[in-house]
Image (cartoon, rainbow, N blue to C red; front, side, top):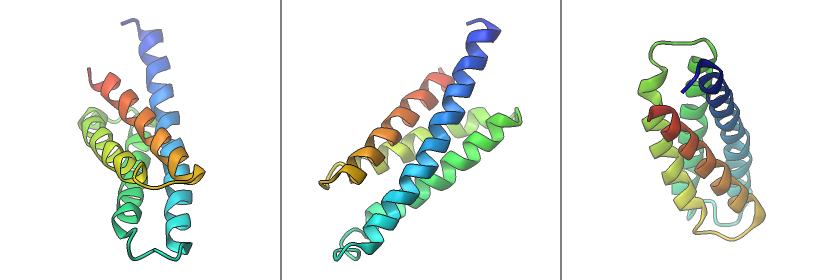
Length: 113
């Protein structure tokens, strides 16, 4: 992999992480405002976990932290868990959240490879 390709992949990963921060926050807010917020507690927790780890991962990559690589696998695992939970529910917000999390997980795994 060339330095240019590596930089492009890192930028893509940072962007995917920040997209997760945005979509999971929106999804958690949607779940909290639903009549079934108590039943969706696991979804809300996973959305918040995904937002937290994705933000940390993106920030550390942006500043070229030597610890970024250690977060990629964790970020991918948390995002996959969030996507799987969101996929249990209907609606555009849930689908968008799951898709953003899957993209981020895939990109983080590519970075780790």
